[in-house]
Length: 421
Image (cartoon, rainbow, N blue to C red; front, side, top):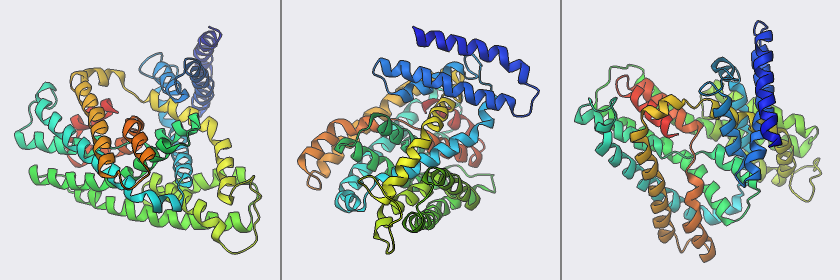
């Protein structure tokens, strides 16, 4: 009850203070940032008290206090706080990459690949088929020709199979999970993030064959996906090598250096037009697995761990308030009205997606039962699909590309995908 009272007081204070500073440059943005830190943290504590992950509370706070509900945080403030999201994604991606060990990739790579292929294939086929069968339910899709409906179904399936490494990594950090299910889930999510871009390229090509386009820039957009993957690996490798050298030979002021790495990495990825998530993931992986193999003096004194572990601890300390605001902003971006308008179509699609993930993981574990210890296979078959449901930035990005590339098909497709996400 006390925390609910705190939320009411925060909301009242926000409504009273906001008009006083609306004329000041950046004042609303700073006020919204401070309000989200306090309000989302409070809702997160309420969620934890009822044994729900704090991240769910942060998202709920964003929906509750965002433009679609109480409006304490305006749409302009959400847009202005966009760099917070970029920083959070960079932090999460680097930490996710640093969680991967080369020995684990070498020993469990085949197992993870089989699970990923099976799960993505089942999800793609099921989602594309269900949307094709039900597209007449949506007013925005029922007027499409058969070819257009098939193209939309293929594009939808190619995007809706995406998972969210950001949410998965944040949940693992929030719960402290380090067991075989957690590591299998993280491995599948990270691997799927790479595979799905290739799947999207193939579905976009199929959609172009079915529905000739009048958008001259579309080929460039799809062609740039190849550079987004290859370039991200290259840029991430260079960044990871530089970070490893710093840790090995200097290793000072790691808290500030952690923030610098994430800011620099996300900005370089933006300028190079490569995928930020994959860039920082590659950098984190190389930092963790390369630093201790470099010759030279050890400048970092890690508490019972590696040089990369010392940097991870520094990043985790700096990431806590960023994660709170990031997930609150994600909730604030949800258009409740848009979701309700396509609810009849979204609900069966969401249920189909969840069921297909469960079936895909079950088939994948049968296929890969000889590639991992029996206890790992059994645990993965029962629980891994639960960690794959979330979607976030990558799916939104691909939905935006589809909307821009297919002028007639794209807008209703994007609305449907955002409602699903």
